[in-house]
Length: 339
Image (cartoon, rainbow, N blue to C red; front, side):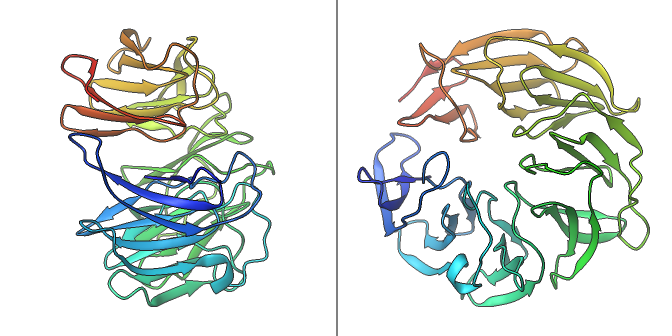
């Protein structure tokens, strides 16, 4: 995980033993800026093979040996690609692994998206374009074309997975989206949800380009931070309410549920039957098979409302949840805190 030192001058990449919480290693480096909502890394560490990729809010990308904490290679995206765009929240999109490369949004005029060789850290390709969004990219096969999909500062796009060449651009009719929620691939189509343009489902042409006319729209689901998840034919997303939409019926709203634990943002982990929703200081277990999405259990993570902006990690029956100052491990079978 990434956080800051006590003096708030350095990023800290920290590795903990999953069974005990004991510190195994940490990497620190100077990272000074004045960002909104603090200076800590916003991105999720990406584990691949025996290494971890971590991107800090000021553009510091590190490839680290997972067992030892040894830095194999590193780059600063802002200086390397002469990024002049204003990034008030810093770099927020998590690294994306594509074959033997790691792809990140640098945001330079000549290097909007870039790919680095995982082993050497050498630049594999760069794609010109605009400043980055505040969401993450995905890898998907759409219209028979394997491509990287996501937002830049004001548009949705697809890039060839091997070369980085931009394949298509879609600018929404209403300007001003922050483009934080991550798009979702569903059966060769693409679900997108943003705060000004609502939830939309798009299909693709045979050449891999997007059909700009959405085939389904829901104007009421307008998340500014939460990413939707799909279970069967249902779309779930939190934006002050838990929304449940019908993918088989024009994204029709099946239910909208209010709960004191639901605010502007909530992460969701799902399987084919249940949702785990991480709200303001509480974890909700929801039945995903019913239209009204009943809450079947809940667990307080704190005696007071707290923001849970870091996405939890689920490994077997252990759930790892991070707040501003703590990391906790919960045993799901018992519902008790392990560490």
